[in-house]
Length: 579
Image 1: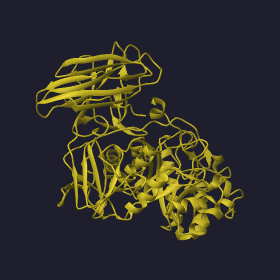
Image 2 (image 1 turned 90 degrees about the vertical axis):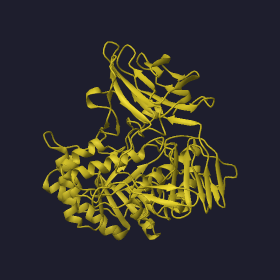
Image 3 (image 1 turned 90 degrees about the horizontal axis):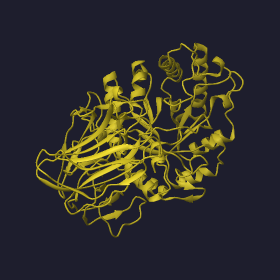
Image 4 (image 1 turned 45 degrees about the vertical axis):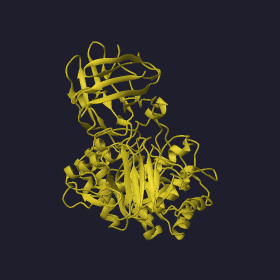
C-alpha cells in the first residue's frame, strides 16, 4: 500500500509512544567502499578485493554481528517475557531506563524497580543489555536536553550509576533516540544543537572512562545527511559507535546506504562501528517479514554492522505487526530470528560474485549460503535447503524469498528471464538516474544525503527524489522537474516491459512515460494504482529504455510507489506493486 510504503510511525523514546510520520525506505547506489565480493563456482572461491579506507577492518575479519531484540520492561512488560527472548536465542536486549523516572531527587537513583529487576534477571541468564538514555530530566536545565556543565555532569553520573548496577552485562548506552525526528535535541534558543549534544557525549565519556560503549547519533533511518552535522561538531572522537535505525520494507539498497555512511565517516576523519539498534518490517505478511529479517540481518552483517536489534520481541498496540511474537504465539519472524543466530555464529558473510546484479548470494563460513533474487532455477547437490523460518524446503527455486543452503558440494543457478529491475538492480550500473527540466537531456542525479535517508536527487530540485521503491517529481506543468530512470542496452536485446505504480489520492496525479530507443511506448497519468499494459521493444546496443515521471499540472501530492522490470522477450508478466 502507498501509505505503508511512504508513512510509518516513529518508535518510542524514553518509554513513551511517539506516533509521527516516518520518511520511508529508500535509496542509493553501489559504493566502492563496500565489502569484498567472492567469485563463486561449484568448486572454487577466490577473493576479489575492493578498496577500503586506511585503518579499517575488512568485514570478514570483524567479530560476528550480534543480533538482539527490543524489549520494553521500562513500559511495564512482565518478567515472564524474558522466557520468550530466551526461546529465540536473543543474546542481547535493547531497553531503556528513563533518567527522569530513575532520578527524582538529585543524586538519588531508583535502581530496584520491576524494570531494573527484569533486566538484571536477563543479565543473570547470560544476556547483555543495550540501554537507551535521553539526556532530559526536570531536575536539570529546565527539563530540556541538558546543556550546562552541571546538567551534563548529572547525566553522566546517572549513566555511571547504570554502569555500576549492571556491570559488564551493559554492552552499550545509546545517548538519545532518533535525534533527527521531532521533539529531540530540545535546547534553549540560540544553542548550537550539534555542539551541545557532542558536549554531553564528552561529559559521559569522561565519566564512564570506557566502562561501556557509548553510542551517538541515533537516527530514524540511516540519516547520513543529519549525521554529517554531528560529525562536523566532533562526535566521532567521543563515541564508540553510531546508532542507526534502518527501517525499510525491502533489504535491497541497505548495503548502499551503509557504504555511504562509512564514506561520510571516512571523510570526517574517523570510522567507528555502526549499530543498527532498531530494524524491522511493518507488514502482516509473516513469510515476507521472516524473509526480510534474514535478508536484512545478512546484509547488515556483511557490511560491518557490529550489532542489530529487531523491533520488537512482541507485537504492541502501536506496532501490531512487528514483533517476533503475537502475545505468546511465535510468528514466522521468530523462526527467522533463531535461524539467524545459527548463521551469524559462523562469522561474517561475504557476497558471492555470480555475474548478475539481480542474484544475491551471501556465504557464511565454509558451507552455508543465503540466496535470493530474480526468479530462476536452482539445483543443489549434497546439501540441505531451508526457508527463512528454518523449515526444510523440499521444492525450491531462486525467488525474492531467501533460501538457506547448507553443506553443499554444488550449487547451480539458472539464468533468469529478468534483465533489469528498478528494485533489485537499483543503484547498480544497470540504471542511471536524472532530473529533466522541460525537453533537455537531463542532469544526472548524484546520491544525496538527506535528514532521514539518502536518495538520488539534489537539494536544488526538491521534492524530486528517486528511492528504491518510491519517488517523486518536482515542479509544475509550466516548469516541470521530471524524474528519469534510464536503462542502456549493452547489446542487441528484445525485451518486454512490465511495471506497477501506485499513489495516494492526493494532488492531480503524476504523468508517466515509457520510451524505448527514443520512441514513446506508453503514456498515462497515475492517480491511484496502475499496471502497465504489455509493452515490447527491440533494442540495439546503446539504445535506452526510460521511465519518466512528471508533476502533471500542479505541484504537491506527487509521491508514488513504483517497480519496473525488463524481461526477455516472451517472458513478460504483471509486476506486483511494492507494499
